[in-house]
Image (cartoon, rainbow, N blue to C red; front, side, top):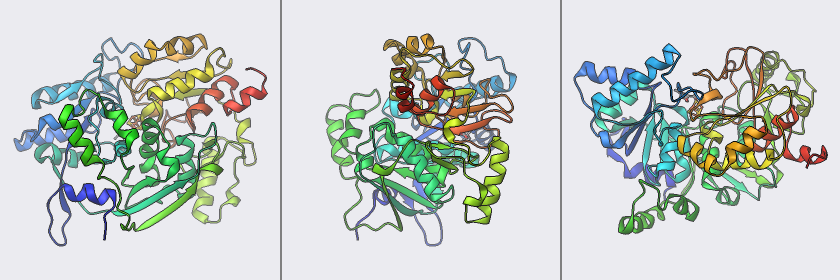
Length: 471
Ligand SMILES: CC(C)[C@H](C(=O)O)[C@@H](O)C(=O)O
Ligand code: SF4
């Protein structure tokens, strides 16, 4: 029997396997950030160990960094300690670190691909659940806990139980204005937040193949939001074109050899998945969440559901609780929901294509009077590229705030937070209670919906701007 893509990558990396025990996997790339690494380094120090392969380890500052005054010392003492600890650890253990002010600093899941370090067929781990993002390149990439971070630092290997495999096949063509974000939010609403548990998922089919690399990253990024261990997409010409010429991508003959190998990284025709889900992209619409988990979503044209709309008692209770927290009444059209803050950014939607999309929609228009729009590039390079293209000027002229790179309001481990009761439309990936600030209420949306919402002040899509007669 043939193998799936995930099985091929897995088998290439097994350094030890024994009956009844997890496989020991070799790790090709270990990414670290300030939040989940301090105890791992403490553990190394206590055990008197070093880092086994520092050259395969890359650190960046992203969660705790401010996006204003980022060229000054960090004002918040907790964040400052967190970042300074990472700097000390990187120096002591000889690890490459991209600090604030460095052109390659940024959200860990944005800088790996941008540098060309994220490549097909690699095993990539990070003490961060959205490591699945890197699967967009056909890498086996997943989040790990802090004790596992220590294990990888010490040995460059990781014991892992072989996961089950699932295919998500998306047929058809996404309609105009419907994005990869809508696709993945639709998928999660369909499966529920636990639907992918225990699986490595391969996204495939014509609608996936048609996506740009950046859009593929958006899909893979949210794999963890429906419980999947990892999500990946077979590398193809789109992948090779994205990687060619990047700083850390193979060059010359090595490039040719790499592409030849990468072309073998596809699921064999006779391979079998443990599970398959089939979706039709042509029926998808802009999709937004109304609740407090990423699965509680509906099409933008729908209304807030009532708990009684759900069959399952657990879903009914969850809906009731979510409506209370979100301050929403069942039956309210989603489009009638007024939003205070719009956040465009994060490792889900903080790349250059996202900023270009937002800029193209807001150009010549203004952010609504009672609404604020925060545009936060996912990395310093994305910020500079956007500035080169004049996107920052478009945002500022529209009344938006243009910020420095980092996780920012995705989770508010920095000064970018919602006030209690404040409502956001956010291009990030989690809408949990308090995620963007204590008492803050989050609606997950695509970049076009976020931008149109900033302009109209209520949840909207760019199509609504045309009917306003504004364009
Ligand atoms: C802080 C980090 C451990 C966390 C994660 O694992 O994903 C964060 O990035 C998030 O998005 O919630
Ligand atoms: S941008 Fe958000 S989801 Fe991504 S790593 Fe940062 S906090 Fe986590």
